[in-house]
Length: 303
Image 1: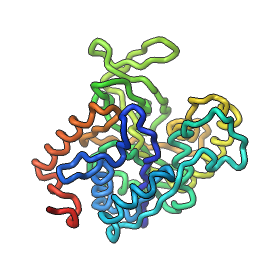
Image 2: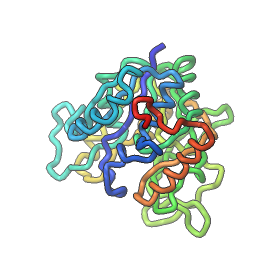
Image 3: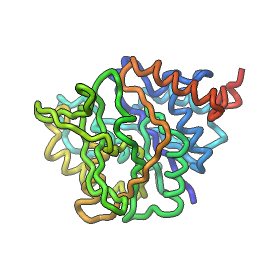
Image 4: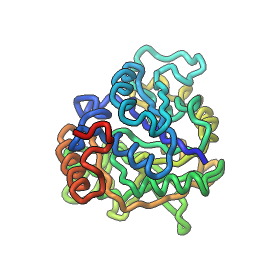
């Protein structure tokens, strides 16, 4: 069965200070995306769809096509403000992208098979891709999707607050709700999130979504319905975003199907702030030294 990896890479990277999607982290100049694609190909994924801004296109093609062309299919789709809006009149004040669920919706024309969604700037680890591909090829259906879940303490940054989808699960391992918390950080050695000016604690056992999702194409029609309502209600709010966890939560709440929580204990790390870069480089170098990855991922780049 064909499976596709959708890479969300249209973000502005305002906190990081540069285009982190293609910044160099590996010992031979690899980006985090390189490691994700390397692991995805090894797991059995046979197509990569990049969701980017149109002005990123030349950079992405120049960097990734020489590396992975011939190893997997590559397609590009563009997350633009008017994409999938069906003529809805957008307010002039809106310049911020509509969010991760809108980015997935932009991939509808390129994806017609079970697929996984990841962030471009998160390192997920090989086990996560193996489990995702196995689920997509053996279990995924219109009424069963999945999320690769991580332990919250292992996903925080030492340099500022992060956004995470906090997952609640039942005794059978299905997610019962997923709530986007946009300001999570450690406060006096305790994990907390901010909401309406107040602090709330989170336990060390909290599982979170790191935006590694397993969907079937039915997600596109469902997301389109939700996005249409979102525009009616929130288009005038400059900072409102249409998040994937909202789509997943509505999928569960409306009884459209179940969402399997697939835990992975693999290493996760990512870059939200520029200070995170050195940590990520150190982690990748450690994995290379252990033999988990070659010194140069792509043979063409071996020096």
